[in-house]
Length: 220
View 1 (cartoon, rainbow, N blue to C red):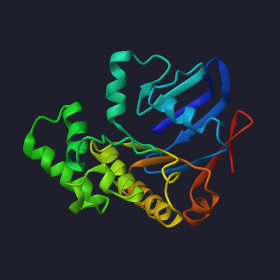
View 2: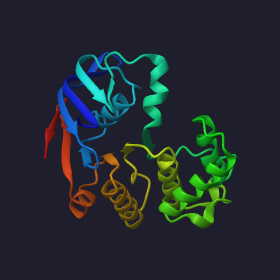
View 3: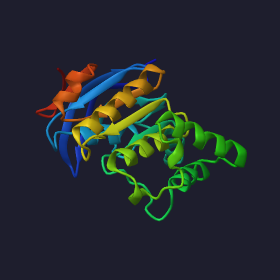
């Protein structure tokens, strides 16, 4: 069964249709780009996948959760299987890298201190930031902060990573590094869906590409 399985889905923002007739199937370990202009529905589509925006029409299934009928109390369990990478980082500015990651583990039920320490070490190593755990977010460059955000997204070993314009606030060279890292993650079996409007990155790191265009999701 696909990780993401949408049939004839319609999405609204403030009662305005942003996407209609969406058919989308994404398999485990696949990397998919979502392209489109600002306001075309890319972020709305990603938000629907973690039940932030409701499905108005059609059927939608993510990680075996039926988004049409999902109960409010089940949404946290869905979200624990999804890692989210934001354009604007959304790191907690009042604590260092280690405690940013520790906060997520505490919030998602990791009670064993030794396992927490080990998992934080693992994800920092995975994104090449092993020596930065003591740093505050403001002491890091934009690219370093985004690597920490990816580490945070990996903490609960998600089956799906949703990256919403993850290179939008980065210089081109750093953006290349971040996309390369996300492709590495997909090659290890985690599904990655990345919203972007950066055509150069798509050409440099080819993968299946879809575009939000005139309220439809179309292959490129």
